[in-house]
Length: 139
Image (cartoon, one colour):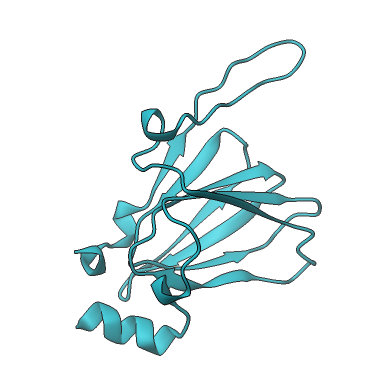
């Protein structure tokens, strides 16, 4: 079923935001906020200028990607169409569904990419070759 996912299934979502003069707060409370249980949290930081991350797809993993600090672009490809989503606010997030190739680009200085995932790390869930991904989507 996830092979049928297209880029329109990956949507930008607003996280709850509690504003306060001492600073704002956004909380993600699992399935109350996002449509999957959180099984893994990780973040990318100190990405050198001009470098890219990602360059893969997942067979079954759901993710929520947040620019916790700074900004970056997420280039999505579903085997037919491409779309770029810019993330630059800590209360905006990208809901990633399985079966979408993603590349993270244009990291600003000091940016932090926070990722909440629906499962623990599993190398077998990754598709790391673009040609293999296209064949997977066409199958």
